[in-house]
Image (cartoon, rainbow, N blue to C red):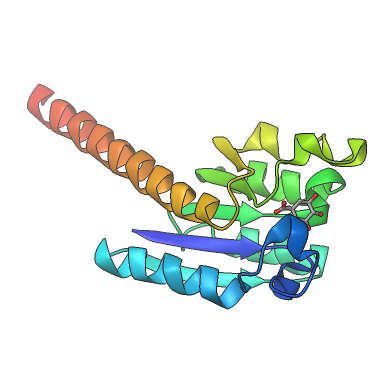
Length: 160
Ligand code: DQA
């Protein structure tokens, strides 16, 4: 099982930027916690951060055939990027959207996510712990999917 974690613009500034909203934790520390959960559960994990929309689109496309699921915080592109939404819809892999802050409690321009309709779920307002919740949710969903596919192929084989 492989999960790719994609982080959008300015998330490389965590620990420095607006600590009253995003807290003191750095992105590398969030990733270290995710890596340790992944190792404990024998999951392959890859991290990617970019400030550029096209690079994020490229990374999502690369996940096709390479990853089983995506955890993404598209940051400000959440509210603007049809290109990121279309890329997620195109590859059709289980995708979870994460935000450190509760975007609905903030400025009105953050209330709308263009990404949410193509994701299996959204985790908001839980700070860095939201990424841990996303890992648990993704592992659960992928395990259910694998079990269902196995049962279906077994039923098919028995029919023959
Ligand atoms: C964010 C929320 C976005 O509105 C903002 O542009 C970010 C971070 C969050 O994690 O809370 O950069 O995605």
